Amino acid sequence: MLAQRLYTDTKEITVEEVPIPEPGPGEVLLKVAYCGICHSDLSLIDGNFPPQLPVVTQGHECSGEIVELGPGVTAWEVGDKVIPVSGKPCGVCRECRRGNFANCQDMRLMAFAYDGAWAQYVVVPAAGMTRIPDGVPMEQAAILADAVATPFGAVKRTGKVSIGNAVAVWGLGGIGTHIVQIAKLAGAVPVIGLDVNEDVLKRAKELGADYVFHSNEPDLMKKLREATGGRMIDVAFDAVGIQATFRQAIESLDFHGRAVLVGLSGQDIDGGPILNFGLQGKEAIGHLGYKAVDIYLLAELIKAGRLDLSKSVSKIIPLKDIKRGIEIVETKEGNPIRVVVDPWAETEADIEANRAKHDDF
Image 1: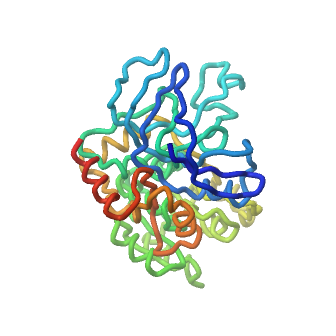
Image 2 (image 1 turned 90 degrees about the vertical axis):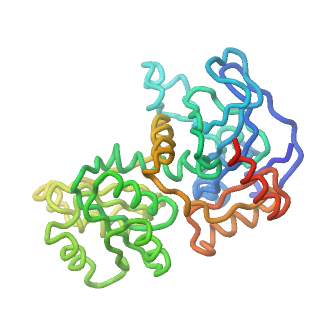
């Protein structure tokens, strides 16, 4: 099969012929339909994320069809269309020993600790898979496993957004755009998008933001106060993850507001005056990832027409052009929400034919 390979010592990226893997106990072999290109994949390439293997196939947001069941797998059949989770519990940490696998303290991440899905086939755990409902496009299903599930977890679990909350989102790329949509779905009023790019601000407004502002405006806090009728922000999400944006998110909070850090960087946190946390009851919370059930819930929301991801897949590229896809994400060319890989396509015509084929299942 064809697979992307990253040689972590030299950072060389290749597309090679490699053996099709075999599923072990509790695993299945998927024929990959699509796999997204995520910024965390890029963090392994640029060295911000420490390598765990000398060579690895990347890609952890995928959808596919089961083509082989490993020993002991039940309740699934060859031909089922599924979305796998992008991690395996270690089995030995304190939480795993308690049976609390979802909160494993040393989760083995797909595309980092074991081979991912920038490939024609991939082996994944059967536990935690989500069946793709009829009518949910396979390319949209792929990005649920992180690009949409992580925002869902941030809004629902960490941010605890409820009906009527004022929500602001710093950074309106793939993660931030979906936070806007999910916060709106959760009943937040108003939902405010902030970025430095005029085009992505316009896009956020089209996708449901009630207000959008440039985050570098000198009177930003005044604008937020006006937009919220003077009450400021109940839940602020920083999808950028740098000192300047998180400081703004914390400054924007109303009494007992929560600032949720979703973006990641190596910068130190600047939370402003410590006094404000005590006197105003502010909270600053980190967020990472999602639970397997979140993917299921999102798939059901798409099926029911409550969540529209029709604009979320900005571009589909053949696997052979993976370096070009990485470049698009790195440079933000065309302001993509998500770029996904089709491992079976050679040309643009193949991409369209494959989309039509998947839509027919």
